[in-house]
Length: 108
Image (cartoon, rainbow, N blue to C red; front, side, top):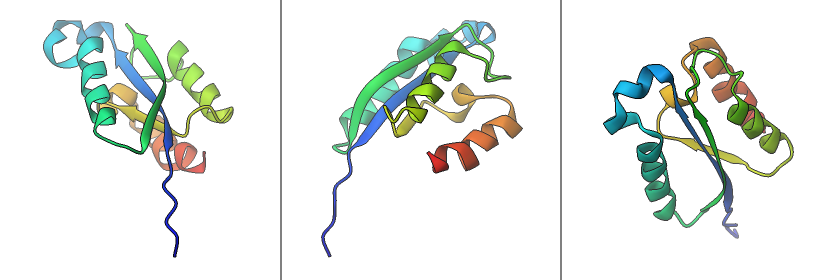
């Protein structure tokens, strides 16, 4: 059996809401970027394609400019892997977050 090494085309997603502003040390855009980039550097099967940053946007809905661009790039085949620091950065609405994680992203 021949094993094919797939290279994932990665889009990193970073979000910081105004409410997160007091927690600069642990949740800053810079910190999220550093954590994700270190992770990607350790993996040979990940290629960073683009970065999507919604700074100052709530995670309670998905009407965020960079998130919408991320979805468009998924639909257009530009990226096939999304990496975020943690799920709270992706979204805070459990039902909609569940839809993207369990239905939308696996299909794409």
